[in-house]
View 1: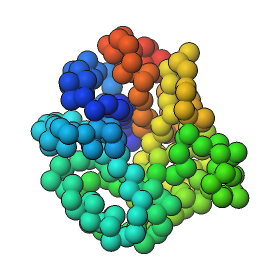
View 2 (view 1 turned 180 degrees about the vertical axis):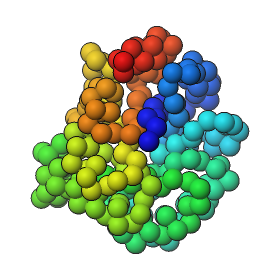
View 3 (view 1 turned 90 degrees about the vertical axis):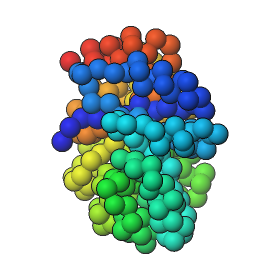
View 4 (view 1 turned 30 degrees about the horizontal axis):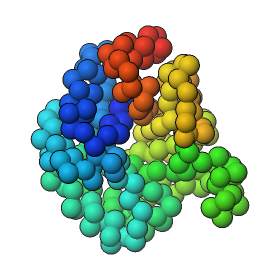
Length: 223
């Protein structure tokens, strides 16, 4: 399975996204672009995505609703022809199946426990399971729903890969020495791939500062 690098385009600015796309072009990596709620809900975001050609597009909607509403949302963005689309696994098996049924060529990605949560913060939400045990349970559900990919932190990949046999996407990735403000379970790109991730998501480590230099740092770190 190919190793993908998804660049998180966390901005409202189409100008900034154009710059990110232009300055991350390289033949040494397979790069896709992840658009979250910020860009997708911005004034020009949807139109911009509709015009992207010959790029891997990852719509990080993180759907979390009743089955009918989730399926309707997938139908509503079908015209964008995105390659990947996320749904929270905690939406439940029926919602996961409903979305998969109407997804067509779009890969449905199950989001497990967010990388901003650790055991302590998870407990605050009412969960009694540890992060590890909850993600294992979520991976089983994603496999049962026949999802195309799963999102989990690099720390969970070693035991998730035995449960979920398709694409594993790891967020919370930082280049060596880069600090994290809001994510607890982070990892370097090389370590994530060594652990068994097929794809990684990178944001500020690439998009902040000198993008071309950051891409070179990433290439060097993977060798």
